Amino acid sequence: MAENHKEKKRIPELDIMRGIGIILIAVFHIVFRSMNGIPDKVICSLGWGFVGTFFVLSGYTCRIHADVLDSYKRRIVGLILPVLVIELVLLTLGGLYCMAVHGYTFRDVIHDVIITFLRPEVTTRINGTWGGGGILFTNLSPVWFVWSMVWTELFFHPLKRLIFGKKERVWVCFVIALFLIQNPMYVLLKPAPWGLTILPTYLLFMMIGLKLRERNAEEYLNRLSVPVAAAVTVLGLLFHFGLFLFNGNESYYRSEYGNRGLLDVYTVVLQVLVFVPAMYLLARAVKGIPLLSKGLQWMGRHSLMVLLTHCIIAVVYCDILHNYIRPGAYWYPELKGISLTGEIVGKSIITCILSLITCIPLCMLWDRVSVIRFKRSKKSHSPGD
Image (cartoon, rainbow, N blue to C red; front, side, top):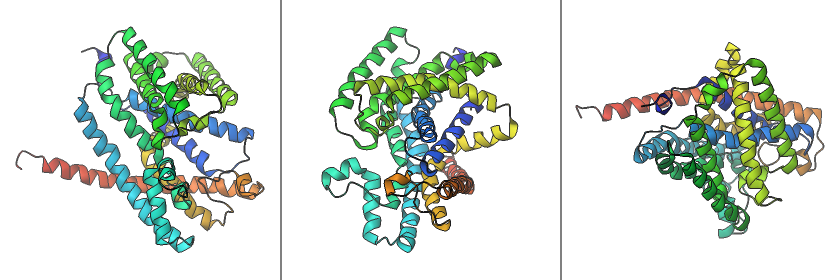
């Protein structure tokens, strides 16, 4: 078996990338700024840039030679079940908190629970008045990304077995087929739950990661000299930001119809192609700073837990700090008719930092629970049973 076909061990640079990404997403969700200002554009471009990047990294680190059923079992145990458990706990505790502090009724909690699981794209078709939830829903809304990943991997694993290691023309045909499917889906279909409208794009992102794996992109990038790597990083990030300014297509990732139609499809793919290597080279540089590297690697390994919990934790800190607005749907004061002040910005930054710090013991607790669960699972499958 060729070396590049072997299952890879954990790659520090990729964990650093995930760590940077999840911190930027927390900033995107929690730190208040003026709408369409330069800080807002920078935060949005980086935050949405990591949506596609997470899919690429998932494709790059997949178990290539695992059969489809084994891959499904691993994702059910490692992704779907943990997400369901964490989300149910957050909905329960968050619902009780909202009832105690924000005047929620039991019916309000159930309302937000239903919208969280079905998504507004579905609930509005069932009942036109069920288009939006309250604080509980808006601060659990990042879970849409997880369900997008679940749906994408449903198709990815069988395709992975068919395409990996095949000739280039097979890849070309596959990419063309995805674009042929994606274009009418994005232009003609209404927004679908959990990002289903742009499922082919998410699938393409994962296949890009698989292709980079096949081509040993990691080894190639590691061979670049420091000056060249710095130049590629800066130019890649600038080009990515320029594409964002040109199109401003963050709505694409939410499966909302963009204002440029098919151009949105091609822009986000091009953004990923320049953003991923730039961020990898940045992570390679960060790896040389031991303390920062270890912290970001740890955060990257726990990015799922941080993604699910950081916003709802931020609500509590906003209440404690007596902030005027809450994270979630209203990170622009203008949408609430409130002027942006230094106090609002300062409190939101403090909230973001405290939320990320609070995620640390929760991640450690979850690690402990996972270890116990793993030991029990291993014992239940022992030969003596």
